[in-house]
Image: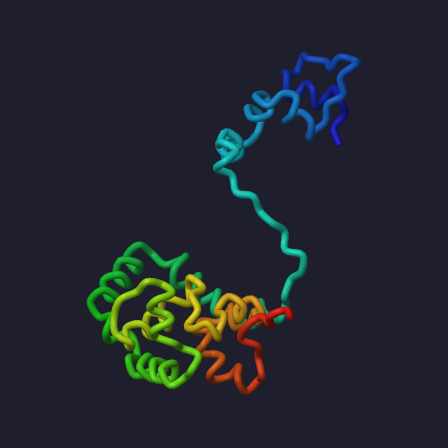
Length: 202
């Protein structure tokens, strides 16, 4: 830790000497002399400190690190970085054009239809309830596809008997995987005797 005089000279100039009744530290210079602190820090930090307080992001520390979950999802995250974070502009543009022109070819419609039939055959998807609950219009097939591909992302429930929010919060492995929670329950969770809704208190 720098002594009081050297720290004072760094902030106020080489010929300056700190008064006897002043005690400075790296921490309190920011509070006592904010303008000088900003002036003597790095450019990126200066820009960040000048931002309004409301625009700064508050980060919350995670109390525990789920090592097993990280390992299981690390490959997926790595692939996503190579696909979306690190590609060149040409690669991004090419992917965008290909996705726009060949969307129907890039997705396995057979697999989608298989999951649609799976949900329709289950009592846990109620098309009429889903339609009324979220004020949607369309056929039963449209409604089931909406929940299958979009609805679960905003934590919509497929019926009053299955809680999407509860299932994802209860089972972090499902939340970290690219699968619709109800599809996961019908294909795996039901055999594993997983819960689908919070137990009501009597």
